[in-house]
Image 1 (cartoon, rainbow, N blue to C red):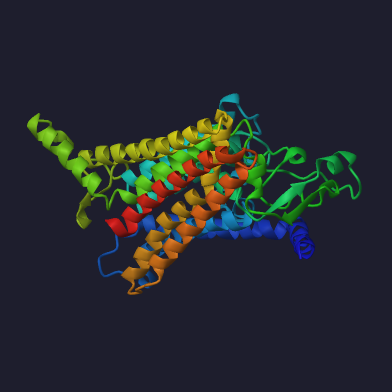
Image 2 (image 1 turned 120 degrees about the horizontal axis):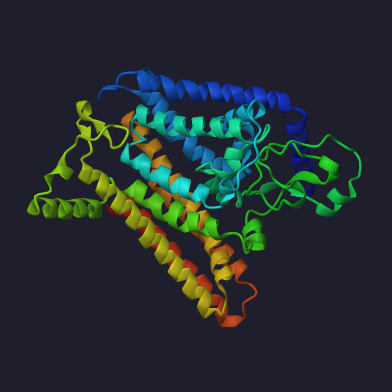
Length: 455
């Protein structure tokens, strides 16, 4: 059965290379749709309380971006690898187009720093909450449009027909790289066959994300565009276990930033971003800060006079953040990232130490939380989907059970990964890291229980 599946996937990979021109046209169609949904609503009047999805372009664009586009792009990465990046992403297509017509400069050393995707994700997530990016078209245009312009500028300055932005700077590239580790398919490279260079001798492929194809392992960095499929008869799209990449290659020595992004960003900061509007802890924090400010005569922080591009400011809809709101959001999200991410880090480190293993094993063990982190992102983003559909009158009574099932499946997968990663440990030592992983999953599950059922 796997042989037949690999044959079909191999044919699909070859078709991607053969129909590169069609894929480019498809990318430009997505760019056009992206531009229409991003730009036009930002210039339209704000929708009133009676507006509905099908009769208001602003609400429709909000639903497409945050209710469909982002949650299901993340799901596609888990299921198919980074096909989105290689085939459909408008930002990547525009960056590569600008690079073909730009200056063609070399990539500077500072840009190669491995922490940029992590830092970009953290700052973009925080800023998005401050200006309510999920709720207002102007905020979406500022963040998504600003990112697209930056991608085009980087493309024009550096590389020649490459995606330098996607490789080094894109705020979601690190998240996609983590989620793609779970994909049940990837372009496998036979390094020995590559070096042997048997026929057919195809023209050298343009690897837009600047990968060393010969040494490529797994689906994490690959954009799955198919341009190298069949090269030297050594590159082929095949099926694999969704656990393979983390178990076999998760102990790479250069995965420090991946682990930081996963624990403190994808899990810690993201949960705070999805939670704060519902959290009684956030309200208590704000009340405590407000009382202190009043007692000390610092009333300027209670003013709601910040511009919309700095803090949410739409007084016509009775939605305007005070400076205290902004401070509270920063403290709550920062605390969520540090407390939850740091707590998970300490748990996993303790489990590794009890098992007599090194820091590198801690990082390997941390990557076993990728399924739980991926499920959390999907649950958080799809909460917008559910909210908007319920505004339209759909009850969606099955959503609660689906959330429980998704979390349970993700946690079971996480524990299975931990069991596999700890396979070389003797006897009771195997229980320590798996137990730490169990406690970590329970902590994450408790956070989601609070959001969907506890509060």
